[in-house]
Image (cartoon, rainbow, N blue to C red):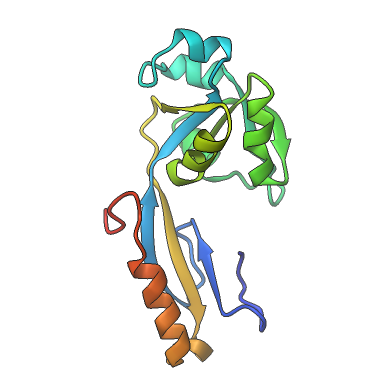
Length: 173
């Protein structure tokens, strides 16, 4: 979901640190970055899960989400840009959830959060790799507007989301 919060939206979940000042927020969890590829592609067959090099990572053919706005780069590419690095993006998709299906049928790789990739690693013939670049984790937040800040049902929902189980400790910094 994206902000600004419209009347029909009561809450949204985001993965960016830049938040509008008029919204309340609380951190939900951190999600480490991993690389996902087809388990039987040539690279996956010859490389251990934790043996990818920076050179390999940058040169492998990447699938990535399309830019939302002209000049806007996502979390991964913004971080790489600050390090004077650039990955080899050969395919972009406006539909992020379609990217694992593209990766499954090609030699493309996808860089994403571990919680997202773990689902597809279990359901498709995909394998995740440790990324050789020290990306900061994706940090997910819940945001809500002042008009629902004191609403009992909204407090209940926020608490439910905040305390729901996670494969990792959500309170990591």
